[in-house]
Length: 157
Length: 329
Image (tube, rainbow over all chains, first blue to last red; front, side, top):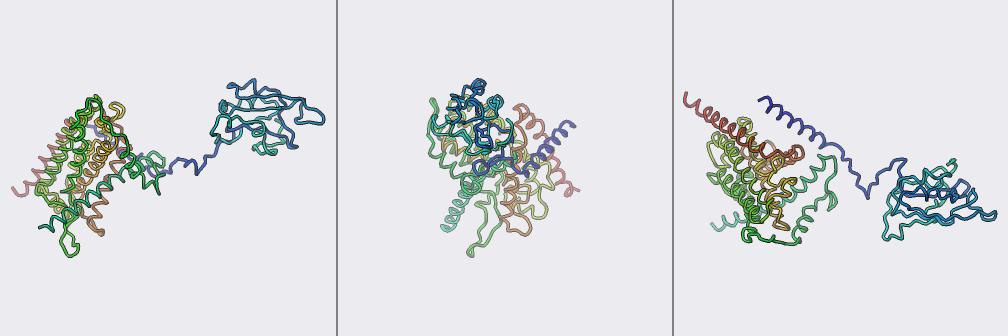
């Protein structure tokens, strides 16, 4: 008899819990209209960042290419010359491509980069209609002005 | 006399329209409410607040492929969903929405028929509705469907008994089998006050009768995928679906009629009170679905035969004794 009573009480308790939840605010984010705010360290699309003076950070060392577990990065380096100084090192990246379809957004490239050139930004809407359109070239990856990626252009690395 | 028939036909058509609309919007209400219980929004894309969702669902089901499984018993396979839906709708012929009202200088009662054995008719028709499930599960030539329909048969037979016993104590107190008379007998005191045990029995048995969670074993998706309607698609499936939801509304309406005073209530007009109470009960059905997990099959049977039926018999006996005692002394 007591068993039945406790069981019935448990049911009533459960009903009380769900009743409380009925009046909670839904946690749903109505996505296309309302965008979720990502965490500060969120790993989204890549940016090739610039120094505050507009110089490219990338020195074409290809460490990101070596560390990339899904082999999504292709870099072809070229020598800086006094009348064509692109970066602050000896070399710069002449070609820099990231295949966003291969990338698993692990952030290893960002960690490996000695100059802090490659960073992962907050943009996550990376869909496209063709595979070709998702191979980001250097023009697409380089931030349009220093600090456009959200990182401080005066930082060390 | 032809005028009477015309009014009857008009009322029937209106009632069927009302029921089907109510049932369509109950699916939306259920989905929205379940969403809120689970701290999410629920369907809100089709039309304002998702109000056109039932229409979209209906169109989708209508244009779906109409298939028949190999080895199905064709006649029964086609007949079963219709049987389910027609019996579900038929019950409303005797459920009173309100007392007589004057429309265009004519006394029009807000019920289709005041049968003197109304509640008996309701039980009989809802028992017939079982055939829709049994035959549908059997004719589809599928083991899951067959298992679902067998479960459903056993469940409905066990719980019909408890339901009947709960109703008998109400009938004893009201002194009539007519639903209109039963409502009129609750003018002063609702039967839920004098018959709380019977109400509890009725409600538990009612949830089991409508195959709703936590007693939705005939269509337990984990064990039987979809149970008796597994081989039904398109509009035949929709008919089962409609039948299930109408049965939920029926059980709510019956609970209101038998225990919660039917159309009685202060201030508001009578039919509004009735609809409000039914809405409340439908919400409780959804609330229970959002809360309680499905019971095991042996638990279901044990609850029915070892708890509800003895309790029902005891309640009927107690009611009878209390009814007779003052007169005998």
